[in-house]
Figure 1: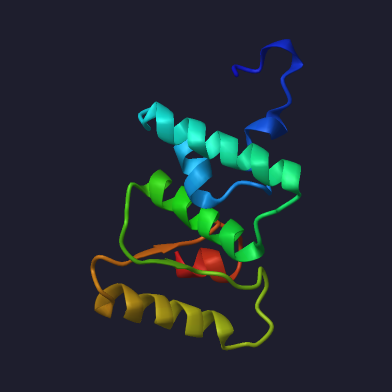
Figure 2 (figure 1 turned 90 degrees about the horizontal axis):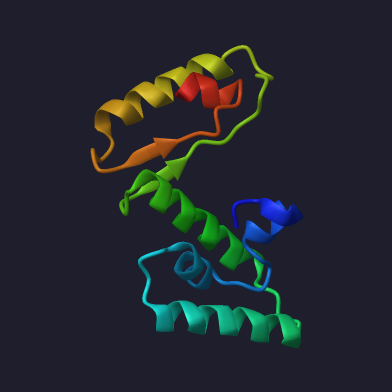
Length: 124
């Protein structure tokens, strides 16, 4: 939908009844029609049966979406942390860790942050 006729934007977000694989098939315009139809049917069947996808499957879906967005299938390390430092040496520790990992980690590995202040901004 292009948002016409008051189409709810939330309807374009992954349903609690869809697996990561099913959702990727629905989002992929080049996916085979049969595969996409099968995914849509399975989502409807899960909804009717009340079978929501668990937290693990939701996390896997997020990872798959990130992989698609980055166009990358290798190792991805997500950097998380507080928006404020609690200890005096914590910021220096994060800076040193970022430097060490940047120079010694597998070059095929990608590090991502959500862009938040604190640990994520320092690491980036």
